[in-house]
Length: 305
Image (cartoon, rainbow, N blue to C red; front, side, top):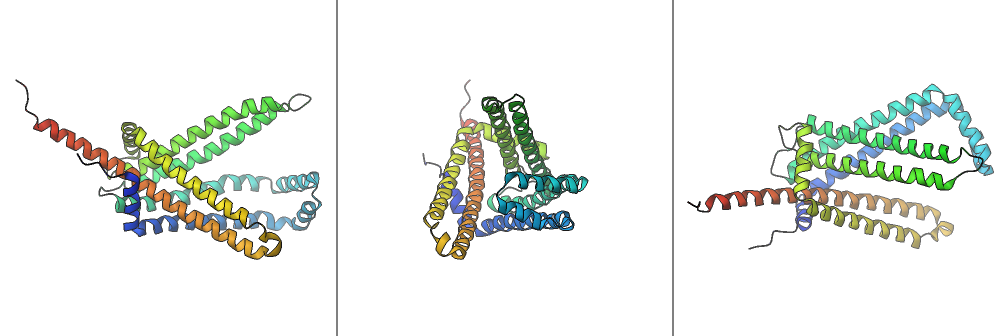
């Protein structure tokens, strides 16, 4: 009996054969980053421009006095008032919608190129991505609420109680983070396992069933790609540490090198992300082929009696 090909090797081979998949991933991710940065920059100019707080903030920053910096920041928040609240509500929603549109369009293209089956329709794919964005923002809000609540409980007495702070905050942070990771992962997998004609609920259920039947295979594959990204990050950090001496002699060259290293890290990370998606698709396809083979084998067996 021949051994089935390794899904990770098969994934790397599939991405190398079709480099457009990798380029599409870079295109949508980097386009989103530029759009989000532009929106944040414009929002900052619209909010802070009329206040003319540049000189006071610069002087407070240069003084290294935390109380002065805090007073300036509090003054900014009070002067912005409702405008800041509206920006904190509207801007994340706009950024989340743009992200959802871009990733939904990119996923349909990449799944179609990496898999023989037809992907989810754009509407169902978009709903899954919007749910991912909503879950992310909710996780951020819950994390902030948990940390602020823990600080409040730890500072109620005459002296700050660090034991109470860590006792309250640590399990909440772990619970919220783990719940978000699991939900986000199943939604992302549902977007690539769903097929044309399915609703987003059916795609999510199919993802849970497929992963449940091959839990160890998916966990092992995901761990390998996580390890590769950690090794890549360590290499980048090591290069940054080795070149840190350039800060005193050639700061401009160090800045350019840092930008190049960051771009290289993001590009290779995008390649690994697409390869992981291809590996998941290969695992699901191999499982489907084994099911078909088992059914054919059972049907060809002579029935007793």
